Each structure stands twice: as C-alpha cells, then as structure tokens.
Image (cartoon, rainbow, N blue to C red; front, side, top):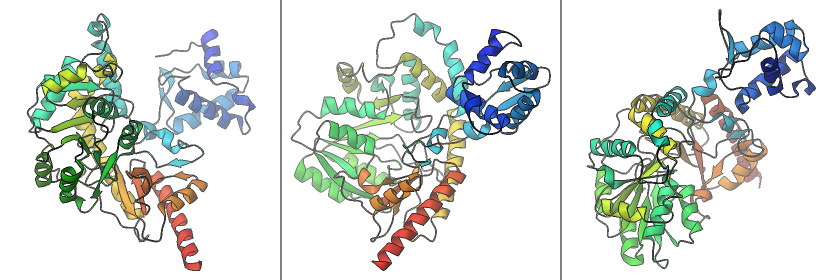
Length: 474
C-alpha cells in the first residue's frame, strides 16, 4: 500500500501521478476529480493510496482549498474515496466496478470506437475473493520461489483439487490424469498438435461454435466438418453419427454444457450416445459451472474411453486467470508432457497457486453470487427483446443469448448499423464453421450490467426498426 506524507516529495509524487490535469477544460474541481479517477484506473495511484492533507494538496497543486474540498467530495460521493475519522482519506475503486460480472473496460469503448461492447462474453474478477486468494498465494509462495519454476504437469495441490472436483461430480479422477495449461484454448492447441496427426481427416465441430476454438483449428489449416446444434433442439446425433461413419473425422470438438453460443445443454442420453461413437471427442467444459437453472441439473460429464475433457477458470473466475486443464488418461498426460509445446502452454507457477487458492476456498460462494447476477441479467435482456419479433430459447446457463432475427434481417448489416451508433455486436457468421451461414443470428452476451444491456437493446431496436422500414419501402 502506498502512503503519501503530508509534506515534501511524497506529496509532490501524488501530484505528479495526476499528470497535466489543469490543461483540460471545465471546472477545476471536476477536472481534478476526473484526474484522480483516471490515475486510480491506470494504476498510477494504487487503490488504498492515502491522500495528503487538503491544505498540503492545495498548496502543491496551486489551487484553493475550496477546490480540493469540492473535488474530494465528488470522489467520495461517487465511491472513489473512503474517509475514516482519524485515519484520513484513501482512494479506492467504487463498488459498481468491483461488484459486476463484466470488465469495466467493455463499457468504456473496448471495441475500437464503440461506446458499448457486446462482442465478448467475458467475466470480470470476483474482486474481494480474488484479492483474498492473491494474498493467500503470496503467503504460500516461499516454497515455489526456491524451486526452478520450469513447466511441470501442474502444481500438485492444484491437480489434487481438480481431481477431487471431478470425482465429487461423479467422474472418478486421479491427479495424474490432469495436465494444467494456460487456458482452454491452450489445452485444445496441445491436444490438436498431438492427436490430429492425419491432416487429410477433418475435425468435427458444432455449427455454430466458439470462435476461439475455430480460430485455433483454422490456424492449423484443419478441415472442418460442421455438425448442426440449435438452442432448442440441441445436437443432431444422427447427423453426427453419419458424419463419423462416412467422413471419418479424427477428432470431434464439442461443448456439451451450455454450448457457446447457443446455450444448448446436452442431456444424459445424448452424452451416452456420443460417447459410444468411434471418434475421439474433446469435450470443452468451460461453461459447466455457469448453470443458471433454478434447480441445477445433475447431468454427468460427457465421458467415455474416447472422451477427453478440457476446462478453464477463465469463465467461472476471471478471464485474466490464464489457467486451464486437460483431463485424460494418465498415459495420454505423460505423452502430452513430452510435447515441445507443453512448456509454452503451461501457466506460471504463481498463477497456478492463485488458481489453487480460489478453487480450493470460496469458489462456491463466488459461483452463487455470479449465477444470481447472470440469471437476473439474462432475464433482463430477454425482457428487453420482447416485441422485436426476434426468437430465442432462454439458455439454462452460460453467458450469452442466441437470437434469430427473422428471415428478412441480416445480422451483418444490423451489426454494421449498430457500430455506427456506438454499439459493437457479433453477427452469426462469426460462429459458423464455414464463415458464411447463420446470417440471421446474433449472439448477445448478458454479462453486462442491466443499465448497459438496456442502452444496448435500445440501440438494437433502433437499428431493427430502420431495417424493417428499409425492407417495407424497398
């Protein structure tokens, strides 16, 4: 924690952190308050920094004490300043930034020139729980710091925790069956490099599917074999079985739990049927813990002799926690450890230590809070779409709603019009294996706060009305 003294260079350091704030237009008090806020967000003034006295700050900044008092009042009222009698004032992050499910930056022009960004289904960190895990990890780091720090299969404690979570969910797992990676995409990359040895044979993928996974596959110039999945009917197992029989894919990449982007959830019978197919299945379980149903289901993991599970803390905890894993046979884990890519795709030990702390203590509470917020935001977004004529199936979990805009509305054209109004959204072809179909679909994440979702829905309605008018008058 940073402390600025009442006189001398520390106070001057506080002033320097604010930059050339006086060059901006507007009332001095408002400009000064804005400079402090930006310095906190940028990290120039760490949260917890103690402010100099009002008199000293006024002297160094060359303004009246009244201006300083007015600026500090603005910051205090907006949650950026905490004052305790006898202890002075410290800058802090307001609750509206720390108690939310999406990164604040996505509401501040995260997509180029857009004011609102609904292109990314990302979660922000559970602020208090993550900071507590970070502190515990620092306390436990001494043993790590005397070791080599080179890539291993993962910290023993983290692998034990993950194995226990699988076992308690009904899939008996030993720590040696787990390999820790720097996220689910890293896990997929490592598995493809090792298992997709015959480039003449395709990889079966859902259509639509997660764009990150499609990008990994395309980067390897993999032939994609699309298999349809819809938000209402789910997986066409007959189509998949026929594709396996006639096209002979070497692998299949599937998202059985709250599929991205459709939100479809695979029932137990479908899981059993797919597990019997003569193809190696990579089951992406990154959304599994984001079950928003009032009564969470008890569907088993998609599992079998040919099924490999991959997971990640990125959606359930924080996108910035780059820790994922592969659950496979112990023999396959040993083989993967021999890959030259494994060291590059392994997260740093300290990152794994943080993951172990947050997965091992307090995760259930984090998930309860996250599910409650996401459920409310999902229902709020669904209500905002009433009357548009768009159709969708309310997802039982995950992070986004998959909307069909109708046969006369192009999602690509709608996204272009929305961009001109300051809203970034992603049209359906971005999720298509062939990049050309799904032209009437739009993915709408509900990770944003209700007010942001309301603003975004208003802009989408405006764009939709323009499209309807254009179609009627054409």
